[in-house]
Amino acid sequence: MRTKRLLTFAVVLTLLALSQSLAQQAPNFKLKTHDGKVIELAKLKGKVVVVNFWATWCGPCRKEIPGFMEVYKQYKDKGLEIVGVSLDQEGWDVVKPYIERAKMNYPVVVGDGNLATAYGGIDAIPATFIIDKKGNLARKHVGYMPREDFENLIKGLL
Image (tube, rainbow, N blue to C red):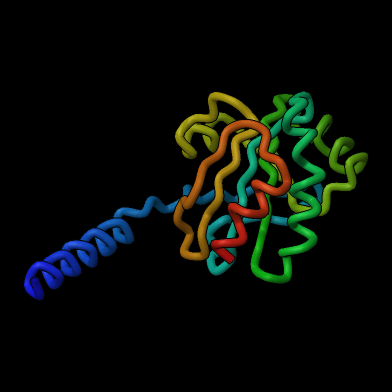
């Protein structure tokens, strides 16, 4: 019986070690916000980072932004960073006025097809990637995410 428990324990430890070593690093990016601040994902290691692909014309995207803003305000000082990545083809011409109108309190950058491809291809938006403190992709969610669900996803990683 003791040998069986030791063997089970060894298998569990091996699986845990493998799962840790196989964790996928989040693709790095270096993009500017509307006011010229450079956001580089690699420099955010040590924080839980949410990368949210969205667009100004996307209804579900616009609907979830207020909840993201509330969670960001609540958890920013506890190690949360949110980066909104707009996929609007018109770029800053439409994104900057929207950010100002919505009073978005987290950094927003304008992404492109290359960045979307690096994240596995974005077939639908909103698409939210949660990155752990080590820079690994921890979760992916496609579609609208209510504030409560969003908060529950990040709380366990902070």
